[in-house]
Length: 337
Image (cartoon, rainbow, N blue to C red; front, side, top):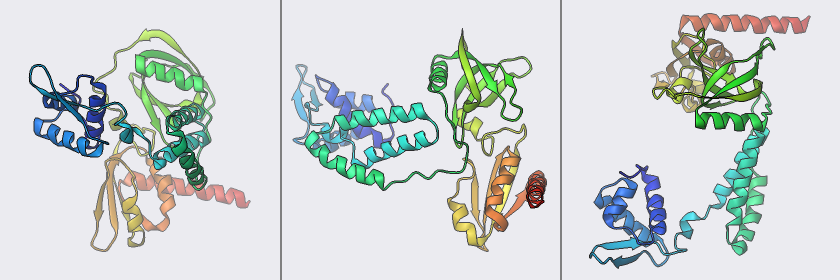
């Protein structure tokens, strides 16, 4: 059974397969390779034949079956990165560097250099000038937030542990108290945002649950030498969607906010939560509803909308909003004194 590809990937996947198959592929083999039926394979073959210089090479095998392949060099038009793609790669590397992800920025820059090195030099000299101009005119918006510098060896160690299902022991510094803890974890993956987090299962008898750990707060780690069996039912995107922001308060709420007509257009374009439901009301306002934890993060975010948002539910969020408002007012009063 071949790999199932999304429609946009099928043409390139088939082209690569035909370029790698020295003996070519029959229609049945093409269909199996990209996981489609024979008729779809015929359409993909015909499209490749039209797009590639001089088309596909066809021949008949000894058993009478017909095969097709891509001769060497003809797939180059599909393999050449566009100017915009190279620019986006450089921007991504610069964004990672600004966020303190030095190792990731280095990897992206290395990839960019490899891709650029494979271009036709005469053509690429022209592209390179345009690329530098375009890159210079592309800024990275630096959002307010922590400027983290994460040691590359921490990231490398965690990635190795995630891929090989190795348990790790952390030396972890709590941000609120500054105290150190030494949890043993089964690392499952990463969450990125204003901060980068490790998602790990803590097997301690008093915990026995998945938790998140800010990677910038990991001072050291070591592999324990023990492996673990990943829970196949654990869904990282679903785990992340439990919360508004990153932190889990231990309880989820049905949340509903109504945004005034004057900010409705902005609210409709805003992704507050991966599973949100947006309703356009008759008066032009917009109601956004979702289910999540993280009342404090919700409250502080709602401050950015000022008087243009109304909390419909839950009541607990209204109370948390008042607490946050009182704390902000108290801080302002202290400044005035």
